[in-house]
Image (cartoon, rainbow, N blue to C red):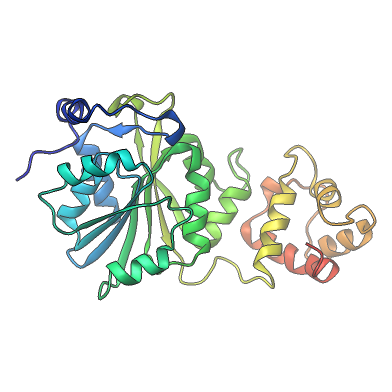
Length: 295
């Protein structure tokens, strides 16, 4: 068995060997606890016929665990300073491919088709850079990739928002956007002490399993997401106030907005955080005829 990368001593030795310095702008925090990495991989439920996609492999600590438990790992790394390090640390594993690319600009569909031919179970497993967590998750879901789901580590506060239920302070448009596509649950809390360098906040591991069909059927997805964002524009405001101030010509269309709310039996005085995803689906469908083509 190869010596694990994710120990404080080995991580420091690798960084010293290559004179690597952390870039704050890339949100680089490397995990130095092998047990936590193994538990993250456990939550992905990989088999030897699974493909794993990683984002931001760093020096390969998680990549190594994924390579041991899957058919192949495909990792996207934006920082080209890490490429020679990964070449070195992951040399024992032939079932890995590192792509030097920003995941937000990469053609992930094409990479999956080229690298995972014949594999029908694909999971994204990653320790995501905190500053860009939400855009990455939304891209992976909106691109409708052929993946089973995502297991990722992120800031605990963001994980709380993603997995939040209606009526809670963390529930918002992000909760709805991600729960529209997936079943979301926080599976682990990770203390800041197991990272090098230590971040300022605790982390959490969230598991998102893709739904076969979205949580609600809506007439227009883009409009549905617009309505949910509008409803949370100012959390203390009522639904009616937020919708009239955020929808195109909302103030002039106040009567139509009221009519739509009445049609779906939603009190205009409620706040966005009290509505379930199903209620938002009904509301956006009732509003859509009044705002079609105006976004």
